Length: 316
Image (cartoon, rainbow, N blue to C red; front, side, top):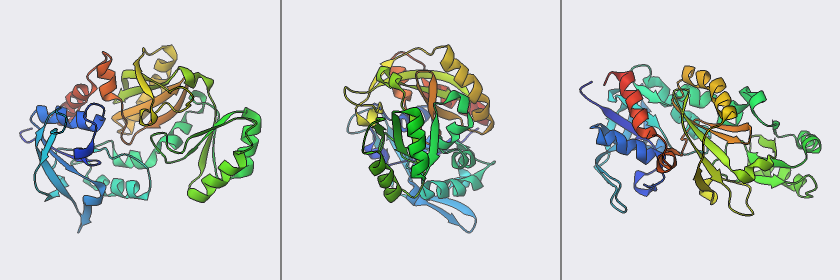
């Protein structure tokens, strides 16, 4: 393929953490391979008389230099049908804006390779998609019914409550079996969210870490452990979790072997799953992170593997 043209739907690249952000790492690897790299936000995406247009800016420089990692040209109206590949990489929340951008980008297939597949992103919200594998997950309830939530808690004791479409550990609470605030939490979720809440059996193994495993086209290619800070049950690095090296075990591989073919079939090329102890708690398909941490702790260069795979798909 003579022209390698990439457009990335993402949060502003000027503000990313270049030493942690997976999207930046993917963009940098593509740029280093000679790809033409454009970025745009969901707010700059349009459907105009059947054409998918983005007000995008082309990167003239991408490098891992603090304070000077990117230079972008002036915004241009870009017909995305002329791209070789498009990455959907903006952070959640997964809301109707996210769904709408997926519906628009879906129109480019199959002529343009859009990753992850926008239809599958739309149909596989991470905290719902994981429910397709109940034998691999801890007991989980998705509901707006406070009585159902109370019965679930009575059965399972300590629980974790979180918004169905949240991200980065925001709005996640551990509620002990004897915590008198449980009803107040139910009321809060009902008031602030139109969607159901997630109530999940608390896994004490989280104190040893929440493993992030990254899969490429259904195959595990790397893992890191995310350890919560003292006094915290959330291990997300957004809220102070610490990354550490870790090896996959037999149970991790069993989980990946089960879900991998489903991910590949759905066009979910780059996915991050969360595993606590022996249980998978989430399947992250929107903008999974952890690529830089895996490499930093001696694991694979997943960005290089990703572009090897993409270029193989495109014959580039």
